[in-house]
Image (cartoon, rainbow, N blue to C red; front, side, top):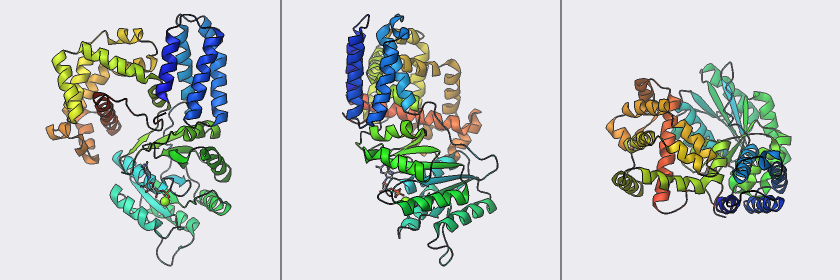
Length: 440
Ligand code: GDP
Ligand code: MG
């Protein structure tokens, strides 16, 4: 998808003033790229309609740089179809916060239960999992395995008590969590291969019985055009407060799943990107949109930035990326170099379509660099070299040592991992992969 869009925008940028035909041609290309990526037709229509209307309007004809303005509009509208603002989990005022998972069988609910629990536990929560999928013979055992991997307890029905009655198990699980003072309860439920009335009723009954704070609809990004019908069925049958896209690591184009937010009006809250419990991240619509749109520019920027680094340093870093020995110390060094390049923002301004990157650069402000320094300096040598060591208790220690929060430490590690991943791909000569927006 992104290759194609990059090409379209490159053509656009060579133009000074835009004619209606230029706009139409661009919109047509965008439309084709989205349809190729399996985005639902009605979403594409809606999207291109809005882009076209705005692109032909005043904001573009009066703009100093019309082409750049169009790219900006596409970016804004793309963020919109991806759900607008990032939506965080809403915690109950009075614990426990109850999170129910719903979705087809195989969507990734049970795996997600473990991922979510591990992520929450790392942030200082005390989650418990409830096994209310009594459909498949192995479902309870599977959740117990996942719970053990995540290091969180699992509530499962006692033999002879509640077996066969998922609504009762869900209710008992929540009660148990209250007694044991867990602050989050994650209720795993059963799914079927296709949508069916009985499954939907069971999920709706569980929802009624436990009155969850969040109902997360888990959907396999590889599901293709069925995504829309499945999401609608779950919205009608159970309704949900948020969407989780799973299997974004596969070579699915993911476009259909991306339609889900737009069609149901429910935000995508998390992305699941692999079978391991750590392959999981909060979903940021704006980041996803800028990744889709600004790829070409990011690469250009890296080239320019590397020119500005001293050559030797750049060579060393490139080598580290390609040999997978990029450490947090290198990351810190890089940020410090960026700070030295005072002109980088000006340079960004000259790069067409780099709006999103510029925003990221604004994040590289002085305070952030100082905080990053503090956090990295609170790590041991070993942790800096092998960030995989950074488990929950180490992160907590580092947060305390650097006067920051665990969330800030998590964000830093996440940014480092993204940088390492992206730079490694670039070093190999490839284009960074966009989850869910696989090859076109
Ligand atoms: P459930 O039926 O909805 O509970 O789905 P499961 O959690 O049992 O997952 C079904 C299969 O998909 C399992 O083999 C998981 O390992 C796999 N799976 C789940 N999430 C992901 C993901 O994000 N990426 C990949 N590649 N596989 C996943
Ligand atoms: Mg399951």
